[in-house]
Length: 192
Image (tube, rainbow, N blue to C red; front, side, top):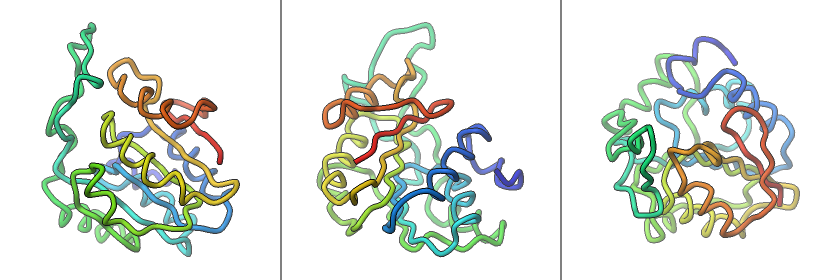
């Protein structure tokens, strides 16, 4: 990971390196990223693979409301909350890329991810789907919509699959795929 991108991500350096390794090893196709916060994950990938086609999907205004599938009582008092990770709009996201002199993703969709809104994204063929959405419904909407557009030997990477604070991630991922493999840190992978 290029250390200059560190302020723009909450991912650990070894998780960013995992993303980069996967981007370097995928078949031809589009990279779709849903959930990006300040963009450090995409900056890192674009920095090493600038010629690939990148699509970003995020509200840029933090997390949506949780559902009952996201809610648990634990010692963290359910630390994932509505509005967390807001950067107050897409313009701030774009500014982050300009500050680092990194080209913007090819398409940027500002939306609350749902079964309805996700259909506005026309992305195919997909070589890599990177999901860091923290919530059940948004993760499930992306998996449901994009799974049929992933090329042979394409991959899905998801963050926080096994994290106790985000139980909805595992529930949504296991609805479609049962072969998730731990990569490193909070990143899990399945291959199509």
